[in-house]
Image 1 (spheres, rainbow, N blue to C red):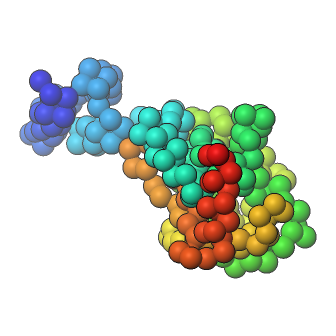
Image 2: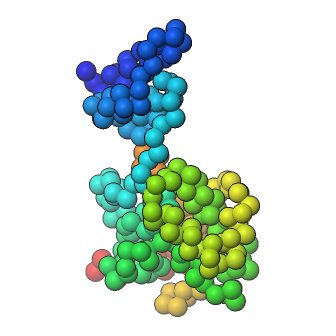
Image 3: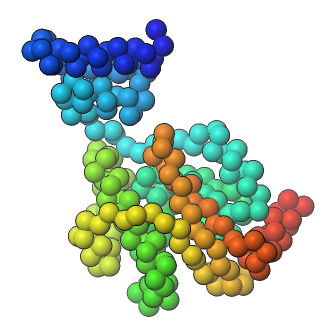
Length: 238
């Protein structure tokens, strides 16, 4: 039987059993069904909820890079882009993005986190006075809070939150606000040491099936920033 059809069949049986007072499938039975049918995370949650049970917590955010997203990153030759997990841990980037996030092969895995980078900036840094950057920062904290709730068993997220609550009053303030931010494009102005002043839209695209985010720097067509990205691409590919 096709996995999705099997899932729907099992969900329907569980729902009928609950409604008519029949046998209530145990969490162990539901978990076994989910494994046998190779259900996705969303399908597994649906199965548990229809059967009147809270779904078991997912152990941690997906950190596997789907091959399609890897190919997409590589195909974006004139646009910096990188992929992060639900806690903004950088998983992969294209060659242009290394001009902004650095060579990740030289960075310890624990230090490849965008939120940690942000809150290590000194309080005197000019980006804390930029309204667009502050909106982006608020959104990332809201995303991290959501990930903290979805993945309560993930030690990396717990350690990150504990660290930042203890080292950054600014993070602690935003965390305490329990904010849920609406994701909108942010205009970033970057005084890049090697490329000069840059301005681009920072787009954060949610990858539904993996709960990851694809972050893309989109310059205005015909702008000096687009020309700079084009020059870098030519240099990298030559």
